[in-house]
Length: 136
Image 1 (cartoon, rainbow, N blue to C red):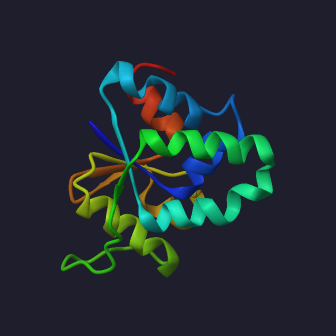
Image 2: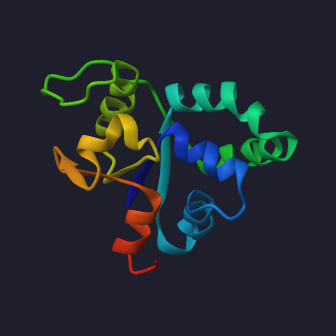
């Protein structure tokens, strides 16, 4: 299963050893989850991880080897219902990467899409995903 991690999930995983985002990275190998993100999310995480301290920066560096990076996709021929233009590249990139699930903690901008499918791709939180897998 291909899981697309947006920058909020990447920051959570880097910044807290108790986060469900980090748990997803821990379980990925055992559950055959392929973890992917886009350069856009990686770059946003690089800019913001410093706010979480040195330990988060160190963990972020080690996490990157577990991620498959995909090019940013900025346009789609399909209509999308997402108000925040800054998050459209995340959604479009996740679709272009043929992800099964887009994981986000951004309930403000992705709220209308949470726990729904967008062109066959589930959009949910790490908690929602883990519960669907029977792990929560």
